[in-house]
Image (cartoon, rainbow, N blue to C red):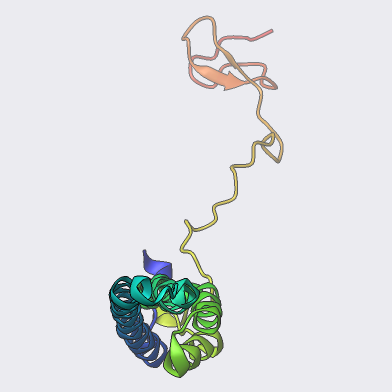
Length: 184
């Protein structure tokens, strides 16, 4: 669409938000891996030593559960931050919406400082439309006023037809100028 093209793309906001999303994605995978390793270590320890000494290590379940839960939450928010960054780059005229979403998900998720700065840059970005069109300009058809129908102006010549020669003559003449016939 013509009205979504801009001369200056929000490159800094796009790159920082995308990098923040990628770093958050890697951190979420690390949290998931540590959570799974903690579960495997605690469950094998509990199975091996817990029953022998009569110790139940169930109270340590919150540790691996927290790590896995944070990992899943970080994974979801990081993917959303990256998706919003791509939408910002493809549709820069809606920079306010995508910047606000990047900012919110970098705060409630773990997108990090890079995504936070990218969201702020997207919010303060000023697009310059192609060909100097005003912000939010959508090309339209040129305005053409509707045709005016009015009676013709000025005096009108009322005409009649000569009965002898069949030519058109003015109403106010007494004789036909073509054949000389007397008109009533």
